[in-house]
Amino acid sequence: MRLSRFTETRFVIRVLRFRWRQDRLPILLFLLTFVVMSYPFVLRMRDHLPLNNVDTHQALWQNWWVLEALTQGYDLNQVHMLFHPTGLDHTLQPPRWTGLLIWTPLYLLFGDPFAFNLTAAIGVMLRAYGMYLFGLLLFGKRIPAWVCGAFYAFAAANLTHALQQPFTGASEWIPWFMLAFVYGLSQIRRRYRARAIAGTMLLTALLFSFNVYANVKIGIFATLLGGGFVFLYMIAHELWRSIAFWRSMVMFAVACVVICMPVLLPILQSDELTDATSDPVVGGIWGGMDLLAYVKTTADAPIPEDDHFLPLNYLQPIASLGGQQLEMTVVTQGLSHIGVASLFFAAMGVIYAVRIEREVLIWVVLAAVFWLLSLGVELYVNVTPVDLPWMPYRLLEDNLIFRTLKWPFRMTLIFLFPYSVLIGYGLHSKLKSLKSNWKNALALVASVFMLLYGASIFPIPTRPAPQPQYLAALAELPEGAVIDIPFGRHSSKYYMSVQRYHQRPIAEGMIARAPPGAYDYIESNLLLRSFHDPGGIKVADTSSADWQGALDQLLDDGFRYLILHKQAPVSITFVSRPRGWMLQLFWVEPKLYEDDDVIIYDLQNVNAENVYAVASRVFVED
Image 1 (cartoon, rainbow, N blue to C red):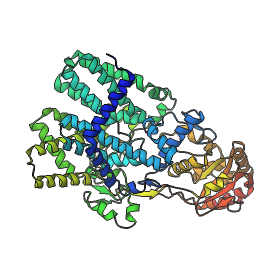
Image 2 (cartoon, rainbow, N blue to C red; image 1 turned 120 degrees about the vertical axis):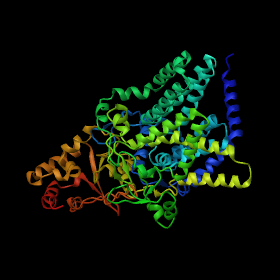
Image 3 (spheres, rainbow, N blue to C red; image 1 turned 90 degrees about the vertical axis):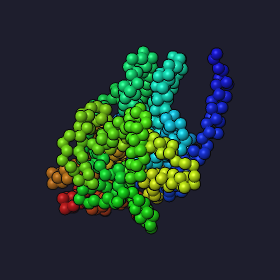
Image 4 (cartoon, helix red, strand yellow; image 1 turned 180 degrees about the vertical axis):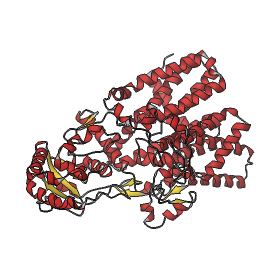
């Protein structure tokens, strides 16, 4: 009998109430753990940004641009606000629809950065609770399920990416997808009715699509994890003999393609797809993960000439609590550590797989494979290359999918899933041998604390959200596009973030996999080219007329203001400063505005002859 919509709604409400009654304590514990693990960020969410990665600025801009395009009727796949006046192809950039649905009402209520931070926090909680439910399905016990969810949500790599890179870190839907997928496979094994299996597989396809709609890269992660699991599960239980299995897989695949087609079709039709995936997989320490980075932490980028590795992961957080060091702690990809304590729990999970339940070997294999892939194409131990010419990733580095992922260390995001499951199984096996007395309970709490603390990035560095003073002055000036200098990958992401407030087109911009022709206009204009590639300018081969022509072209194309940033605080460790010749080039020109951070010039008042004269004198000297 078909349920009415009212009855369906009541059913959903009853299910939610039941889950809340059953899981309110684990959820509250997750919330408390988030408060502790994200300290002091959790206290500064209203006006600070987490960590130090410049991609946070790009993420803030991305949310704003998608909402702007939807409300103003712009073409979402073509950005006219960056690389003015030619614009930029935006097809291959992740709109992160699932996160946008959460961020939009929060943004309208609170504005950024509070909405941005709350969205990240909600994503972390969704990841933790989804993994907890998945653990319940596997273990049937709340304690190992909770620890499994907590480790997966708050381990350094996942928490780092979730807070500062919500595009490549929006993996909160992977546990929900795997929950439905594994349950559906168990239904096939138990020979449930075809209608029940079909319903589960359609739900699985929907949850899988959430990953794709968050980011195609996350969809690839979900595909690799789900595909690897179903392949091993099929072999372990001889499901290839089952017609119901193949029928369900076909149904699941077709449903996934249909649901994800609105996202995938524009990407597949993009003229930029070939160029975007033509670059080889990045190698070296910057591409793969250092072998010891999983059990050590770094205080700086893992540069071989300047090794900053500290013992394990228990001294750095304590040291970082002192004074301003908390603010200046650098979080890098080297902080994808899992800690030493987790190795013992995972080892117990492996023992459980060998001695008690062979099916758990599936998770052992998956963890091993994804861990090896995360090491990239070259093996590094303590930032020192080891002569090992063969690495598993080399077999895949020319594959389109892995070129799309580009950075092998991103494999850590899916390695942590089976690894967390092994930790849950290890704790599950240990709980069976513990007697319920207060000493064992205390030992259990201490072990879980060491497990989570050893894999954390506590305390989380923060920085104030930029609120430039010059925006008020810029708002009073007539319309016109802006040239922000100095140019550069890092500083341009900061300029994009500021664009959310002044809403003027800018000369540069920076998104992942920028099309090859993005800088064509900049290279074609003498003045802009001098900012982009000063080494390629020979002032002796130019004249004042050439500089006047470049200036006239900029004015004709809608540029009006040049903003010289004395320093652009794009991150804690990177401060973009103009070169000396940039400060001198317009020194004699009238200034519209100046403060400690910027100088604003009106291009209509700039004298090209003065610029040429100064350039002839100082360009080569700098």
